[in-house]
Length: 407
Image (cartoon, rainbow, N blue to C red; front, side, top):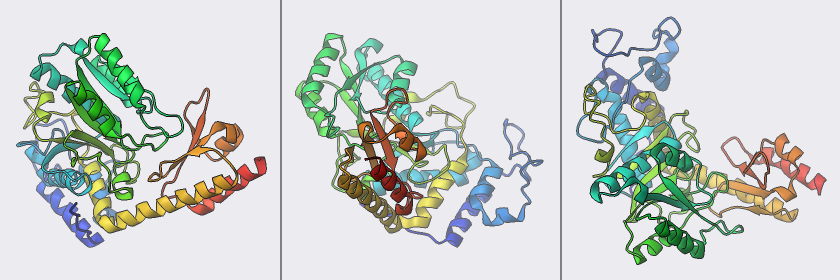
């Protein structure tokens, strides 16, 4: 793994403003042919002095449109300055974090879009390369997989088969995987889009992709493997470098990341990454007025989101980022040690900052008092604590005290 270079605030500011200078300037240039402009000057004044010290906010006001996929040959030349920053984000995530090589991708609206982009690509891949019928393509994932996959099934008219997990370890049950594949084959399925989780949203649990790979290759079944790292993509590789849920695994074709969670970037900062040679399966040639055409699900999106991710990663640097992860892990361990003392049942992956408490050990009133999120608002079986940057031990202590009082 190679690492990116940490930058000072002055270096970050200079780079972003230089990128904006390379973009078109709606304030001074005669840009007549696009249905776009800077933000409304009556509300967002570009002359505010503080903007000179606020590169992200200045980018928001300038309002670059990052439509398209900028890791491909061509994209809208009007915004090539900030597009370079988005390409650097994609390269950093693919190579420095996910141990890959030259990769395509883009900053998406969120993890949901990135997961849907992968499924869209693989659906079209099987339709094109294998001449599959739509009814022969299916999605295979664990029962703990994010609801974005259910949403993708609805949008792309695909069936989904969910594999049971062990309730105590949250690991995929190999016997149920075999049963599920048998069922899919009986239903006429021949081509599999596999979703493996790098920390699930509810439990922080991690799938072993080899369980899927071995089961499908043993039957010589065609599949493509996507890793949903929307929660864990900026966390797990630093907490546990000895994993196989990235591009160092030859079977992993694409990965979702999501910077609006652990990176604390603004909403709208999902990241989709895929090996070269696959983005063209979702090329919308009808978008011929877009320079370079469009391969993405969302189309137009703010270039400021890519700038925000880049700024945060550059400000922290790789070692500052790893230190942040270690601090969160230590807080999670502290919480678990105190839950153990109270004999409270919970689940936590040892490399995760999510602690999910059995609902039989915590009242609904306490859960609501501390804003804990249930797995199901109607019939909760679990409540989760997520150790974020603001969740310091001083905020965990009152929870432990309330739990102790209720025992």
